Length: 103
Length: 145
Image (spheres, rainbow over the protein chains, first blue to last red):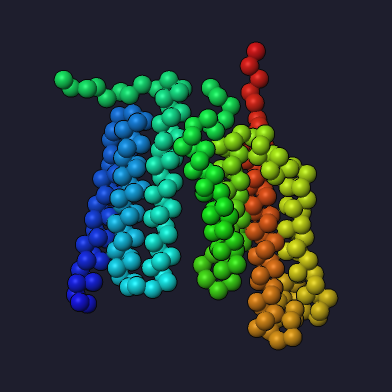
């Protein structure tokens, strides 16, 4: 049981780090506002979500893990909303997506 | 360009839902600060973030009716005076400036009381200064001719 907790903590921590890393690469490499918002949303939801999941597994079932559970709940509320606000105002002030559709 | 973004129903409703939990979290950070991570500065910024969110979504006019400029200025001064006043009181009680040990009967509870009061002063000042900074920058208009 101890091994299971230990290795699943490490696994989810690395999964979260992977999503944060790929989101950061996307934030630099992608061409315009809308696709960059997509990459930033990956960092906020999946990256921090998996890292906090690993912390909850590590700390066991206590008041601390309940407090930790509140953080991803808050992030899942706010991060898509901020992405929505940025994309709404980018759209209203006349930005067009640079990426072209391949048919 | 619209003046505020409350016309978007998603932003409107989510900021209504989140306004109270942000302030409660700020108060938690404030009063947890003397025996855990946290403190006056962080709590002030979090509480100010709730009010800044309100005036971002519902417009600067409604934000200024929620936190009137006059009351905001008084609260800034009250926070600094609370900080300095704790120090001066400890001078009058035969201690150094901001020497919390003399504030209560024994030094441990004196430290506790002094830290709570000083952090409260810092929190009030930081929150109101943040709100005032946001309002003064956001009501800035470039004259178009």
